Image (cartoon, rainbow, N blue to C red):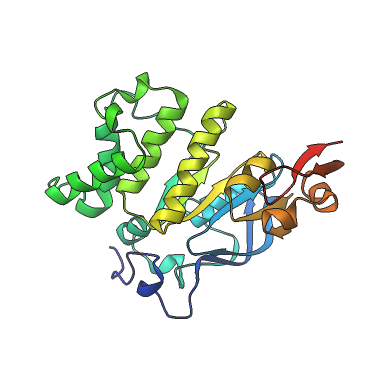
Length: 276
C-alpha cells in the first residue's frame, strides 16, 4: 500500500520553506556482498541546477545515482528528497517527483517515439487508467520541448543514438517530474551528439525549472554543461564545487589519480583539463 501523498513536486513552494535542495545526502554508505561501494557520502544537490557526478570507473557514481532514484537502498546514512526522506514517499508519489534514466536503453525499440514518450504518463494514470487529454497534451509538450515532433511516428529502433536519447529524455519530461536522474546518457554518442544531448539537458533545467543529476565520464563536458560537480574516488567524495573550482591540477589528480593540467579556453568561464 502506498503512503499518503505529501509532495508530488520538488518545486520550492511545495516543500518546507527552508528547503532549497532537490536531494540532501547525509553520511551514506553502501556495501554489496561484502564489498564497500560508498563510504560516508554527504552531498547537497541544489534545486534548479544541473549537477554532475564524475569519477573513474568503479568510483560509485552510478550507485549513488541509483540510491537517489530508489533503485538501491543505502546500507547506512539518509537521503532526503525535497526535504523528506526517500522512504516517506509512496511509489507513485515518488515517480511523479523523480524520473530516472538508466544506462541500458535497449527496451522499447518496437514502439513509436510517441508511444515511448507516453509511457512517462504511467505514474499519473496507473495501469488501468485511461490516457486522457491531459496526458496527450503532456506528451505533445514533451515532444516539443525536446524538438523531436517530426520523429513522433518513427520506431525507436530506427533512430540514431542522439535521437534515441532525446526520445527517452522526452519520456522523462512527459513524466512531469521536477528532478531528472541520468546515468551516462552520452556514453555511446559521438562528440556532436554529446553536445546536442547535454545542451538539451541544460535547457530543460534552466528554462523548465528542473533539477538534474547526471553521471558523466568527460570532465570537460561536465564543466561545460553543469552548474556543479561532485567527484567520487573509490566510494569517497574527493571534491565538490563549481567547474572553475574543480578544474585545477591538484583536484583533478585527487579525482582521477593521474597527473592532469589545465589551459585557458576562449569564451568559457573555466579552463579545459587534459592528461599530462
